[in-house]
Length: 232
Image (cartoon, rainbow, N blue to C red; front, side, top):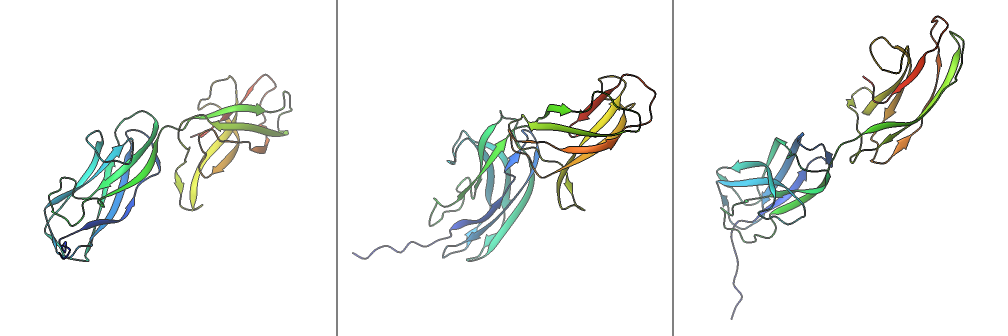
């Protein structure tokens, strides 16, 4: 007996992009492209979905993040795409997967149904920059140059990433050192110097900058030097 020839549409994922890390409840941009790799046109409408999953298997326990409806007919070999800004669910920190599921409700009868899912890992969590150590002279004269060093660490569960700086071509944040009349950082404090941190800092990672700064010409007395990580 001759083997049967299976024909029909066949939707496959060509590409899927999403952030590798994010804060729970944050807005993220999702983009995907798909193609009809079958022998017949795929007739819409059908729905593509992105869900957040604890694993790489699409099932009823997954949380819907976004969906896009595909209308009309997609001819053989033709691609289509979608870009969506979506709100991530407010789930506990941890490692998850974003699953792109083409034709999530099986509205289109396809040659193969097992190739409609693409998974991307994503870490949900918060960065938490803390200053573990700070070294500065205990005494100095007004106007004197002093050397300041400190160690900062990401005590959070996700990488620390600053805003993107178009001029510098990367992510940046600023640590600043101030002279203060007390131990509380506020608008009355005097800026001494700034360290610019470039790039992301993994959870548990640390860095130790050193700067030389000139003390302001303040009246003699007792002051505090404050180092402020990710300062405004």
